[in-house]
Image 1: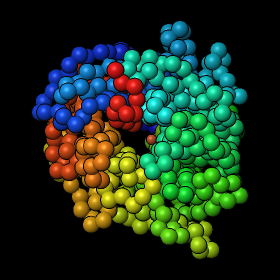
Image 2: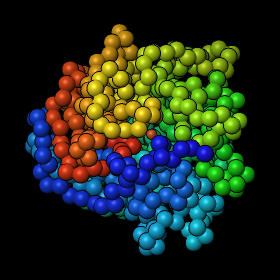
Image 3: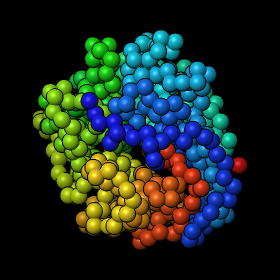
Image 4: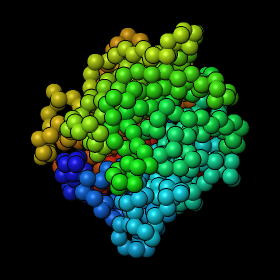
Length: 487
Ligand SMILES: [Fe+2]
């Protein structure tokens, strides 16, 4: 049983906020770059009612979407809960109705649905833009469309019936060369199923391709990567089964004896064309990028050599200890006979699983990877339990995967950073010429701040100060007027 007090405290900065807000003309330190015209959206997990179990994963918290709207050097803030079926049911009942992470067996009978567990999604992971619309996504159910200006929830969508999976990934990928978006759902045919349905959307948002396939064993398939001709989906380590779920535990457990696996799927191809590769036990949550190099598919990603989920117990009884991520290069030789992945460490420095690139370089060899990490050489002066899992993520870094260089930005002595999002200085700027946007918790002032960092010099341009704290962000996305109908 995980130690809830350390891994998921519902106190201090981690307590539910339970309010929605509009802030006109936020306080700013520094100067907001004139190029930033548009909106930065973040999706958070913010419990409307506290979880029933003390060892529940924070992954289940209710979806909350926020917007920093940039206009002519000033910023307005708006935050709203995503009106999921889950949220509305709880508000009507005035209490928590749902049980463990992705386990409807543990829900109260009034909301339990074992046939379509996607109905219980909290839509709390990634704000995505697809064909001019904004969605709140989470891999356990369908996406909810959100009004990009008011943040009102328009409802869950199955894309006019063309999307057949019960689930939709939190990490679809846009191919900047073609305008096509690739997305998948896993456990597509129901709880603990080994089915994956993968789709392509054209730039207008119409589904143009579907392929259905089965994985070696059901496992968390959180992220994917695109090349010009392939979709790469890594998985493994996490396991589940109908019997495990019926026993009333969180969705996943960790099995250190299971291999990692990697599906290399030809875009537009058939299930029988998929190449499967395997490797040692690994935790891969996010990818940075992928591309083709002759007959080789290359993928860069933060990789850990064991369990990275404090809430998901080891089936062999091993106590949890955090396995650090390092940025690694995985290569898949499509011309050879081996089905083994090759792996090399690019940067031997512990980072988190969150990593981003200049998305205009998706599908081709990129130079820069942006990460968040703990720099223990920097001062820290807030009170936190002396636990390595709670050491503050106080820095961003720009890794140069060509020359091995690294540049860092330190957010402050009582600040905890969340994922950086890259925004190009202009549509035709060189790779990496732009800004990083990311929020920081100020643990002393108990407020959230949006930092804007020059991605070339890694120096701070401005900081937007909220007069309250936001719950922890998962992912963010930048939208210009060309991406969404902003007013
Ligand atoms: Fe993610």
